[in-house]
Length: 272
Image (cartoon, rainbow, N blue to C red; front, side):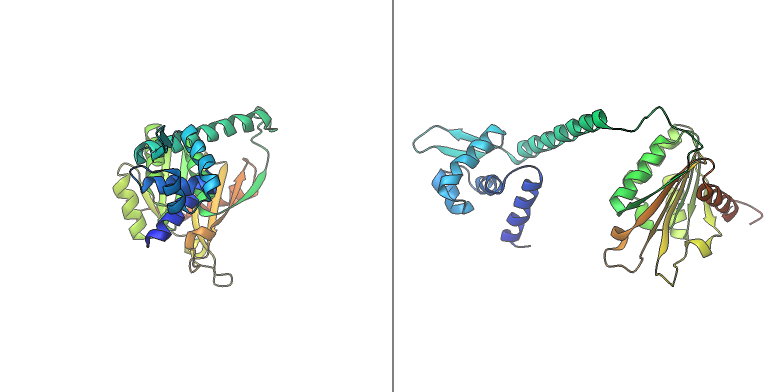
């Protein structure tokens, strides 16, 4: 990666974190100088001279730059560690404020939940589906049944959430579609029985549509998440989609609960 490419990507990330383009470019110019005048920053950043002063004032007000009131004035960036802490805190504060606002305007009645309500929703994108998977594991009250088909699900965060579930004394059954997945599950969670599945017809690739199941999660026997993806897609799990179903009487939940319970065979079963 060239220096110009690195600078361009860094500028884009700084803009994602709330800086305007000229502010980002001036900050990156400052990081390349022990200190500099507005003229030097203009020449290095290629920000118009008349806009450099405005950008520097913003950077100073946000704690990302320091100024020495000499003639001419000198500017320098704060340390990288301090700058990243400042940006991280700013980002965290915005997320927390957003969460407060969303909770204030939320229209759902959190107290009106009914286990008999049947709902099926869809999710798209691996990040969103991972987030929902982790939330379901965190919210589980009694039982987690999980069948892992795609190995990319086995992240550090995934195992952290399952370790937390173990500490909450939940009933946990874990299935792996391959020996490699089952071995990893057994190594990371030695006190949890892992299973191999007899549901090859369900979890294998569907030739007609080139789709395959990526995960099946059943929580407290009433909430179900099923992920699917295109194994041969260029973006891999990035194209993952899922359905999310709730309700004790939901037909999809009932069907998959029975399939999972009948399709899992303990690898420790002596009669296997």
